[in-house]
Length: 344
Image (tube, rainbow, N blue to C red; front, top):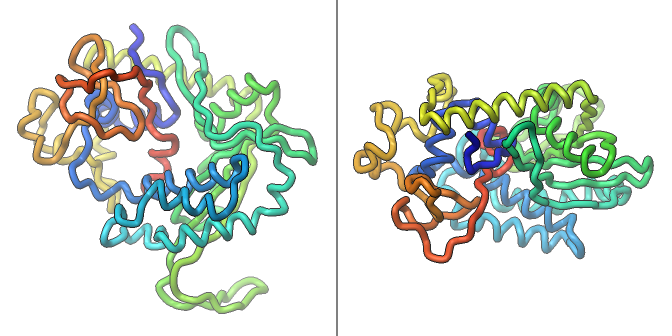
């Protein structure tokens, strides 16, 4: 039995982290009321909007900066930024966009943009299908090769500990497969990282040739790394995607979802559904009990009458039994990178 969902990399990653969390988010559409953990995600989406504008036709730094502000308005920021995201401020983001354009000006002059932020279907084995959404597909004028590009917004240092996390990496391999199938070849996949950080006090490097004092305050840096999955890696990833997609479909069909307690408390971070799972509540059985902490965003009801279809970014009617009139069918897709970037 196949569900009505097509599965993105992030949807599968969410399920792998905790099937119950996937169910509460994807099937039930439960959103934490006053949830304060969205800053990293919303900030990353805003940076994506800026870069999408910058690489688009007629894109300028000023338009990219305006897109950044429009995607995540300053009045939506938390009053106090999380300790791990002190550099993700409005001003630092605004300046980083200009700094990014200048930093990569020469390199990007060699890029011919072929595709920007385009949602694509990818057929998989059996009846299942999934979706991909690459930030960029480019052709490098120097070697003629076609490359995929994925933007990452992080609060981490772009050092030797940052880059290894992307090998092996399901998203990179899935994107590489898509590019090879559509464009006939893929010379490599580029992780395009923007790090926005905060320095609490002035600092002078003790190592390296540059001893220039670094001032206190917000700062940013940029880095890129190319990954080149071979055909054996892609075949392994095809099997991996089919495996996890089948697992999701089986849970949907049976209505039984396991949970992963390791995801409940991870250092300073807590699963947003902890207030529901800790006392053993379920949805919709305990809807009245959890309404103090969660509401249900829902736009369209599936044929079975008790599940929401949620378009990305929609915060519509809050009850599954009252779908909005004249709704248009839309495929659920977790914003790419939500799992990786939410705490970076």
